[in-house]
Image (cartoon, rainbow, N blue to C red):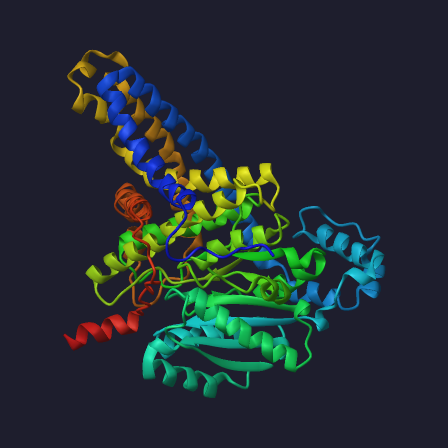
Length: 550
């Protein structure tokens, strides 16, 4: 049997060396600029220019994918996925009506839908009907308030999918205490009759071998749902499992869209489904630095949906129950169970695993605590946790560079290279772009006589001016993504939504680069993060109450 578990306790030398690799590369990239500046300023200039040019090329691609991804998002939100799903129930009759229909290629992907109908008609045995499928939703909770979780449950109810074919499990932590238990029972009382089945699953604390995190919670709940399905004689291969955080709100068509894609893609067990996480639910209420970071993260998720060959699981995602049962659900040994689930699935299925993008959003909250200072700290903690995804590098490397390799070599190497590149670029890019051009001049007196080194700051400044075009695109797209402005804010707040982007270089350095270097440094030293630091989910109401209580 393939071992897909993260090692616990003392690591092997090979594993430790790969744990150190991201820090060696990130810190090494920064140190290399200093060393080259001391040896020969020209070499430093060439090194930095190669990095800047590569970054600029990527920035162009990012801008293109942002625009393309936004268009796909708008199209997918406009499609009547409930109707398309209903078409799959009586596919023969529907296809007979539309098979000779002329369809405009730009008409919301209608030709793709007709092709899907044709394939189902050609091979009945491969396709279940919508009435065969159930959706199980696991909402992970720790100590969130009733108001926060209730909004998430209500958003699931408000989706267009048939609730008689939906199972909702509230996975709450015993370590959340009596307050969390009371909240769970209140939610059951208020919403228990809205679904085919509403389950409360309390995750016991201090289970041996588990880190304190979301993975153990949703795995425990997943097993409880699996056991219940078996008692009901519901085939797990016809159940799609979606995990949500306590503050997630799926788009109203999400489950219809998900079920549609699940049916029309035949290799179901080897696929998972990734919506676009948009951190916009409370975007009007959070401080400006958090708005910039949240919008940037939303953009990145839109971009990722366009690059299917690099798409990995992030935050909320969906996967078939039979696949989860076979692989032991999610990892209980990592604090980044979402991104790690991609690699866990990839190696369990020997490389035969892909992530299907769903171009509709699951709305999430930007980071907000009850005070400004606490919010700034909470944002760093969240990004530190995400950056700890660098811990997947040794996990992946030790499963590629071995004679017992189960996944194909070259596709695995390509994925591994992108994994390393993503973490090192995030850690070094903002620093090299902001300060790199001045390093040769500041630390080497000979640099003043080097034409290349002397002109380097000006050259980088010119390139940055070109990159401003991408910033304007970001500003424009961010305004398009904004939810309606709450009545409690004046129109002047719209201006702040534009002016906030002057903070982008600062947030990139103080949050993205610093959190990445911090997490990689911990891996270098073997100081592992063994606890999922839950991001506080304050609301506008709770912030006002906190101010009054002072």
